[in-house]
Image (cartoon, rainbow, N blue to C red; front, side):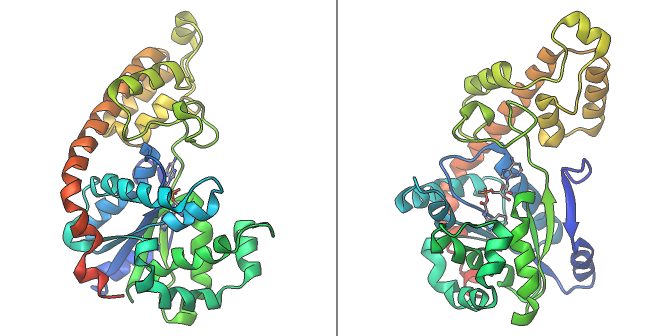
Length: 327
Ligand code: TYM
């Protein structure tokens, strides 16, 4: 994903690498606003965080913001968002984090431990900064105004520099963090951001739980995956075989190709050849969709197996004494 430019943007990654090379160290932080089921796009920052953890051998803090999800969605109850948090944590553990160096915490449970830090942050940020940064309207509930202080807190869990792998939509939080971190005696957090995996149904917009065919969920079974891809995946190929052979596909708008390109086809030479063959008309949309179905189903199957093992590990990750004590 780094080589292919899926993670396309960073801030201060050079300082992070310097800190690592000089032995000052660093830590990683990422998170998830719990909802009913995670789709494959949600896993992208976690996959990079896990890879960095392995390469750097550093701590990872993972915040599950059941509070954020509750505050931002009028229709959800706190009981629901807390229950989804429990479920989402299995999928996150299944990514393969190191149990000795990873701490996963759910805001509504853990807040008492971080509240002193949260209010120090809250006192540094004023209403007009938050409302301008997030475009909040005056009718917004006051919980949503306060919430950013909670998402910033983990960037200050250690005095080392923090690197945050995340989707690009999270950037507003980090801009606030960088304004105030120095005044509280912490480093400005560094970020590496990914593009958004496009919805299956078209190259624009976001995957949405209200349009189930727009996303592939980690819980989708092989038949559902096949149906979604074959029926709903947006193709940049031509409408007839003759035209496809003559004109080839437009890869820029072809979602099956994009999904393979993001991470599902791991072999660089294979994805290159696939792109050339598809763009020149040597292969057809049906073949690319078939490959996507196979890759998705094997990815999801591995995830399901690891998720089963994750159940036993929840307590290790959620109550990681060594890391929790430090705050
Ligand atoms: P949430 O739950 O919306 O998303 C979790 C992470 O997944 C990223 N993401 C995507 N990445 C690629 N393609 C997609 N289609 C896609 N959809 C979502 C998000 O950018 C995010 O990184 N406020 C956060 C929760 C949070 C957090 C954090 C995230 C708390 N602390 C620290 C990152 C880092 C949220 O609503 O994430």
